[in-house]
Length: 174
Image 1 (tube, rainbow, N blue to C red):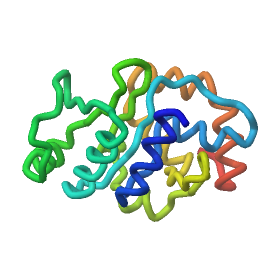
Image 2: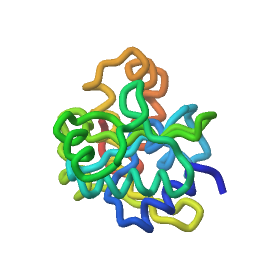
Image 3: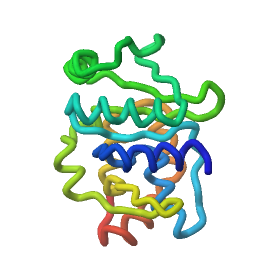
Image 4: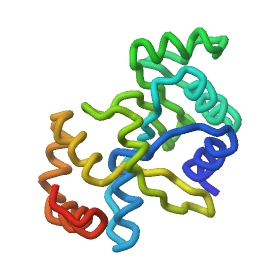
């Protein structure tokens, strides 16, 4: 089992609420048509809840991942006080094995609030574990809103495939 699957399993065991987003989330939809997109990380959108974030950190640490916030290791002790500060700043926390695995715990997904995305999520099974995933149209909209060059390139390059996946899974166009 790879780090991706280990983390998803650990998050489930710790009762962490999250939804998969980003290219990794798109890939969970695309697996059905065997068209996968290259991505270097696993993006997970979490609610702005310090207790939930703390459980996500504990999940990552339980499988030996390092935690980084900005360019620095996440402060210790990794407690509720630190989690509250990260949530207040909506800061990104990255879990990594120091080699090729990266998972981003983000508290921001464009203009979407977590509860809306959560209420409209879809679940996929990965190595026998349920993975909650944001609606594909939400992922595409948040990438468009981010406006980063890499997001614009992804959306433009894969526009037809994404539109087909959205029609297939949501019955409408982006």
